[in-house]
Image (cartoon, rainbow, N blue to C red; front, side, top):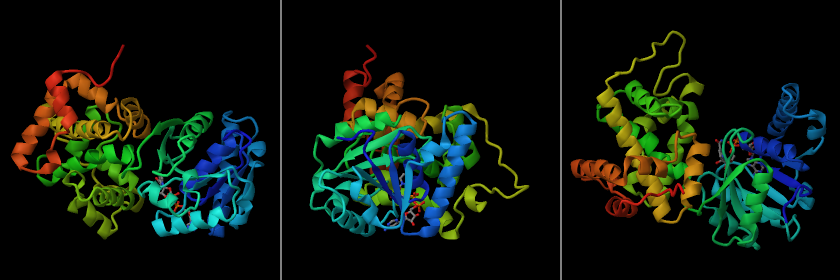
Length: 389
Ligand SMILES: NC(=O)c1ccc[n+]([C@@H]2O[C@H](COP(=O)([O-])OP(=O)(O)OC[C@H]3O[C@@H](n4cnc5c(N)ncnc54)[C@H](O)[C@@H]3O)[C@@H](O)[C@H]2O)c1
């Protein structure tokens, strides 16, 4: 159904759309890239050409011109008539996406399949904009798409079941690592990773440690970046908005509650590295704060945040959001965690993780710290999540 001959249409030529178009063209497809903004399309065209030339110089592709010749650039949707797969990567607004999907259906053939790269919207509600809703599914790439291997494949409620294995195979053919996730807020990565940011901010707000110390505790524990440095890198306009969207979409579950510290940064326009100021100051000459190197404090910080992360992964498994192996793959390949969270739980023992959460729950009387039923079961029966045999 989906193979190398499939012409791929990409809607939206911004950061994600141009990256996805590059991946598809490098995998051998002819690609039509479309945007309503001509300046964005011109920028993508120049950027793709430049990137492909650089890849040729580095010996990563044989012939940049040949790959570039697979692109066509379009300012009208009618160009998509011959596409077999269309991936939408436009602005993250439900009504705009729905309007595009409805219009697309008047142009494409009956067997063309339609994917959305949404990070936070319901794929099911986007599919509902189509008459043939069973052809719609989610393909969530990570930024930058050419470099990040993980792709979350998301069946909507309406999606034809046969489409998902075909999408998975196609992603493998694109040298990606696909995982399958239910259509629930944040899918896998943006859901399970929430405590990495949220719990770090709580620890800071309570005055238990400063940002540099929390960041140090997490990098010493194997994470590539500390939570504050990472939030500044992602940008608070993106990271805070994802947190708020996930919180609202989960019917205000306290587990995902956003923080005022981060909201104020957004309001101040202190978006992080890109604006020169976020949690940290990136101005020339600004003093980098030194962490407190106390090992006991670092261990307590690491264990509190990792216990919260493990609990999210265990709860996602319990609610059948994804398989154990897809949960592990998503967190190690999508956000480069040093190990899978379920394996981490096995290493600690579920009883240790449960004891940390129960102690927080008793201290705060806050549902934010409620342990997953599955974690409690595992602590009781002492079985592992990952069967190593
Ligand atoms: N940036 C990320 O880290 C990231 C990661 C994964 C998924 N996503 C998702 O990918 C999508 C795009 O994000 P982005 O960061 O590439 O955004 P972007 O702002 O860089 O690009 C969006 C592009 O879509 C175009 N556009 C807007 N409305 C359009 C329409 N009606 N028809 C055609 N083109 C239109 C804009 O002109 C712009 O060029 C969003 O749904 C976002 O949630 C983003």
